Amino acid sequence: MADKITIEKGSVQETLIIPLYGRKLCAEVFPKLYTDESAARICAQLDYDFSDLDSQAGSTFWRFGALEAAMRQLDMQWEINDYLSTHPNAAVVNMGCGLDQTGRACDNGTCLIYNVDMPDIIAARKELSPVGDRERNIASDLNDSLWMEEVDGSGGAVFFAAGVFHYFTEAQVRVLVNELAARFPGSRLVFDSVGKLGRYLMRSTFKNFGMENYDECLCVEDPAELNAWCPGATVSTRGYMLGYYPMDDPAVTGFHRFLAKICDSVVKMRIVRFDL
Image (cartoon, rainbow, N blue to C red; front, side):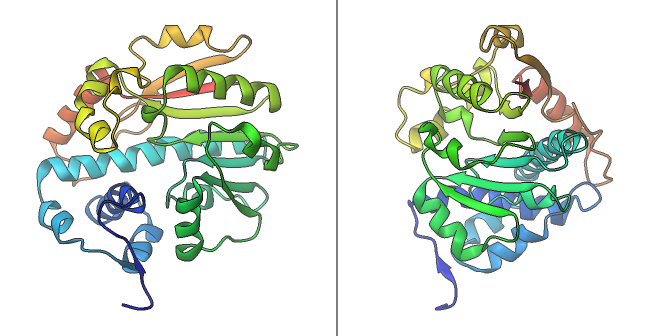
């Protein structure tokens, strides 16, 4: 196992495993809906005990969790590709990137790709997935705006955060939105959010990260409240599970579709877009 990268139990790097495994599982179970060759490749490079995850992979709810992860990535890709259609030389900035390869999945051959995360995550990423042409890793706390100075937004910029802002306070996200608007006028920011029920359902995850005051973390109960965040920005939202794609894959069951509707309407899982 000397040629593999060891992921220790309880480490920060381990938090990257579940979304990575979810993307790998979804590509295997729902291949007509979602493809992600990088997830399987990276999993194969890790010295990590996947047995617990493998034992649950066949369950309906675990597969739905994988479907959630995949739909979020597809939604982000839709928004990025839409922006690149009018800004082909834009910066594509993955905020809180983990081991995600969405930037590469959207590479049009002329855009610039940036991956931003904490130093230990970027260190793991460098080992597992060396940067390509027009790609750069930035080791930084997202709440330290100095990282923005390393992004070339002269051709436009689309920023996205998948599964990241749940762990920020509303105040932190509002500051980030306004800083991006000031530095990158004409850019786009895309992130996912949940309502109050969704935040409550995530309480065990928050506590595992030592976040006992999870009620301070961002949730968006009413999208209309976002209009006051950033003067001059245009805000729109779509359902997370069914707002972009019909989940057209024979492996997606009727129960999966029912759960997807509940997620979008009751849990209020949404994709939020700010045109800055």
